[in-house]
Image (cartoon, rainbow, N blue to C red; front, side, top):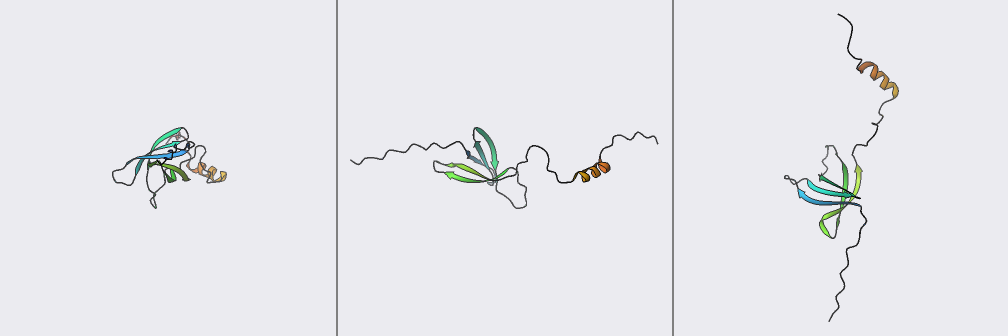
Length: 113
């Protein structure tokens, strides 16, 4: 009688960045997903990139896992989420002072007619 090779136990993967696709939009262009990053789980929607349209969120590459056709490892290509903190400094202090002197709200005008 031939001996059967023992089945391999699923390899234990470190908790990383994983997406489970569980639904599709009515137009067929977006997918409903659950994403696990470390110990955090988030629900979201994935859409294809469209030229000329703004990016909300991240650009990701998905790598399918062998154990399930709906489970993917995530590789972040670009993070377009707004950073928390101060806004980007796009002008000099002199420019800001000039802008404030012209456009700042100076309060109500209390002069009489």
